[in-house]
Image (cartoon, rainbow, N blue to C red):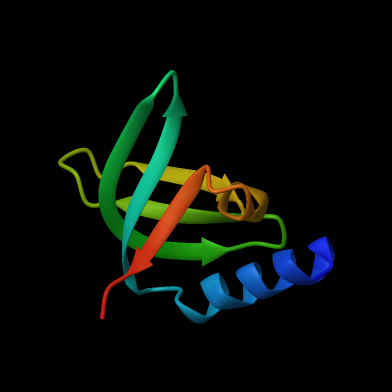
Length: 78
């Protein structure tokens, strides 16, 4: 499968879940992995925003290529 098509399908999948709860597993480098839960707030053409449900209510942004390279893994709540 072509890389552009894969990124487009990842973006479409995330756009379809805007407003949904998600569990986020992010590789922070140096063998550090952070696991958070949050809500997908917005999806832009090259990035998406997740509002974390921690006490600080901070937001994080990732690119769709982060999902493709498995730097970020999303598990959608059922």
